[in-house]
Length: 353
Image 1 (cartoon, rainbow, N blue to C red):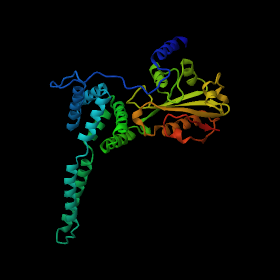
Image 2 (cartoon, one colour):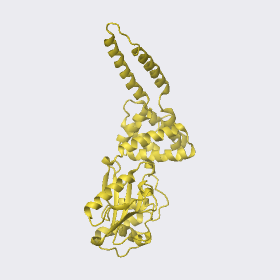
Image 3 (tube, rainbow, N blue to C red):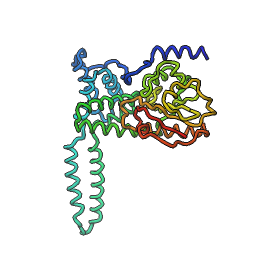
């Protein structure tokens, strides 16, 4: 036991930040290969190179994986200004093709008016069927035209290795940009991307995992870094939160291995605590067989780009069901904090009595 835990303790101690002030930024990646005419020494040229790969991905009927990978590497290498430049281009240059939509709408209205003429001549039934078929074709065309040009790019990126994590990073950058420029075209991009992320991160696609001290040091490091409610002070504090009388559960997605999207911490208590200090400094903890109540004292999201996607509510329901099954002596919840259900990092409690 000591032999396996000592290297882990050293790894977490050396790599984790015990008092994180903010969620860590994505690690830098190598710059993408630039077009021959571009000068890779300056940031504007780097942004131009990323725009080149963005256009190559969107212009193709099926985005080439190599272009998506080059865009991904290049985007991660950009600074804040370069990323915002790319997001403005993505939102503006690849928006809904409204000229095509207007043309299709005029054709649609024209065919609709012809079909409603009430023709009762011989063969009218056959002509009516032809008009209906034309309307259905035009409606399909309208639906396709109303999709922004960046829709296929986002879907292809999601299918790319590492793509879902990049899309979360892109949305985090987009939310930051919206704080500075609340432009309708940027809001439209954010709304579309959020809608897709909600679909891709449905509860059916997520795995619930109980995080313990036996998990890899790289995972424990992330728990320390992302804990946003009650910072983990040292290794003793971390082991206490993962030890007897405590539970930590996280939601994981297979496309982002080894990193929880959101995690929640639970204390198993004999009596309801009167302050959070009783929970954090409970030494020694009670035997779990004596637990009569559970206190959900911390919930933290690890991805700023998933803001507004209510994973916390689904995680809470799954954990409640699991604890009910594993610990029937702990009764059902009586009071649930609305703030906790929002999935944000807040200082609140869920009480079971």
